[in-house]
Amino acid sequence: MNLLTTYLKSFLTRSGSYVFMATVFARIISFLASILVLQFISNKELGVVLYAYNFILFIIPICGFGLHQSLIRYGALLKTSEEKNSLFIYVLKKGILASFILIFLIIVASFFFSFEFKNTQTYLIILSFILLPSFIFEIVRAQFRLNHDNKSYAYTELIHSLLLLISICLFSFFFKEIGYTLALLLTPLITSIIFFKKLDINFKVNIKLNITDFTFWKYGFFASLSNVLTQLLFVIDILLIGYLLKNSELITDYRYVSIIPFSLLFLPRVFINTDFVSFTEKIYDSVYIKNYIKSYMLLFLLISSLLILTSWLFSNEILSIIDSNFDKYSDTFLILIFGISGIFIFRGLFGNLLSSIGKAHVNYYIATIGLIINVISNYYLIPEYGIKGAAITSAILMWFTGILSCILFIILYKKDFSNK
Image 1 (cartoon, rainbow, N blue to C red):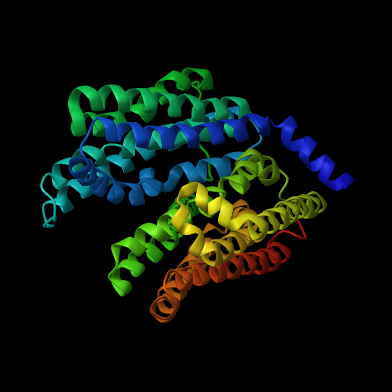
Image 2: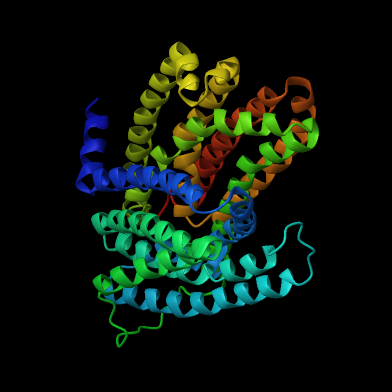
């Protein structure tokens, strides 16, 4: 219990409460924005914008070729503020160039596809420019974390959410679907401008760093690719339900039954985002890392146990909040709750610890294996068990990829770090 108390106090000392509250607030605002936009734009036109935006959402994690991922990991290992300053300048310059390359490739590729809906290409081209402000926004946030300024990091989330809500309402009201796309584009840009000065980056001090080699670029690229594949793991269930069952109602049912379990995944992310720089800075201290692992796993074992018990007792009541007809999917809901416990206890922690020791490519391989198993398993389980089959596959993979990342971290950490 002392271990857990110390861990929570340390989390709060690093402004973890600010990160937690900002994350919760951002999710509420995002939900509110999605409701309000329906008041200004017809479902048909909004659907076309969202269809195009989904393509961009899969590419956003690799904006700047993932250099924002490299910045947070390698920056945490640097000792002086001048070195961190110089690394930020390097990542900013190279990442902007890389983002423009990706934007160019998306625009060119859009001319070679025949889209099902009218104006999809137009929206895709406009939305492709989100990659640039999104990259700048991410490195600004990363720099705050490197400076141990989690409070400012939390404020970026808060301000971004508020600006998104305001801009979506205003632009959508006056300019409809084009206004909505502009709101998505301008919000990360304006937020970045607001917070950039607070970073106090000195562009006159620019030290040449020997860490910005091929390994540096490789790390960021694979870290971003693993995020893309992880997103795809959650999306593939819905795609396969539609493809195998040919029933759009079941797609909607699974989407809404999974809303609460998947929404809860922000919890481990809050702790990891708060602590990542701290445990990366001390990654060579095996005693500290072991204690951190014990503390984290104890906390999320307790949270998972409470969550599973509550869901088992009140699953029907919880689902009825969404829709009274969903209580027939209580088994599916419980399976998904059990599944996310695997992410809570294992995957959220050890996936990031693998990144912390520079093994982001291992996360990519784990996600790839998970994706292959997902497709194969769902081809058998969905026709047999319907959406419960998709839930079973997801739950198994959440635990499998989590335990696999744990095993691989232990092996790689002992091999590369235990003697340092």
